[in-house]
Image (cartoon, rainbow, N blue to C red; front, side):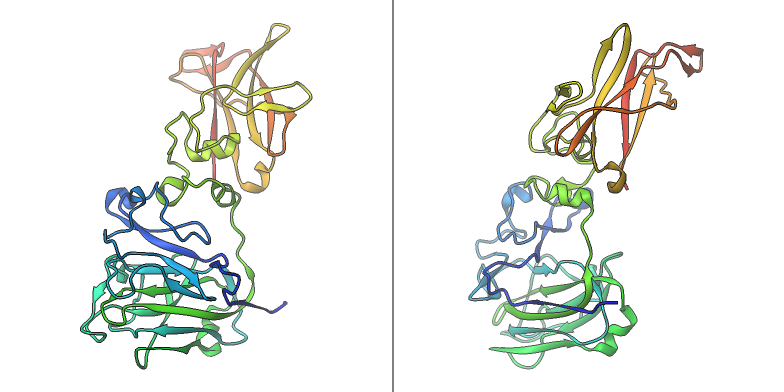
Length: 355
């Protein structure tokens, strides 16, 4: 096994793939919840809370990079929002210490044990001391979001950096586990800010994004709950997972059928098309070229009345393609099984499942 050591110094002026987290009022059925913004994003997208950081205050802000270190873009003392920043996911390799440097205020309350201990509204401290909020770094497990180890910034409030160390011995129980590191600040008031630099992570490699997550990262409206597979932020006929499966644009309302040159290129992506050739009827729809590796399953269903649907064994034949999508053709069967016996189908649809 190869041993890698990922470091972040932020000297290139951006967050180097880290993600700000914000409170989305529409998450969890409207009860609210934390969501990730896109990697390196330092402004609120309009699709989340109308672009307003919660709880609302003019002094709020997100983590940014200033002078080669992670800093805070709002007012460090009077912000109302808690601040969170999450690293790219990595496989932990417990062969060395994991370290990072923090400066600013110290933690003024007990360590968080899970995400439920991280309020979206920052807690006011008593002139830079307890009671107040928490500042520090957390080792988080990707699979369930559990906080495995929390390390507070301790000592004294001040501008000098101090090193936070997750020791090799502490990391050993989580060797090989997919993790992230989070910078968290739930404190406000005197010394209510924290800055970070020089993160050093022992790892065997990054956790790859799913094909769907890679796709959604290309579209700014698909942030937070709006980016979930079942959502439909552009309000057309297709949920996000169907936009992804058929190669559509989730930022634009679309309703037309797929268009293509037989044996050539897909000229316009769209929904299913019904075509006739020599008295034989076919359905044509778009399918991702990487459907096998992305975990997508396309099931063609037929009906004679739009109430009862059958999924007979069919052959999907590619008839055109572009860089991402292939147009596949399926012949209408002569009959399908229905509660009333064999019937000639007149309707079709495509059911898509995604892991």
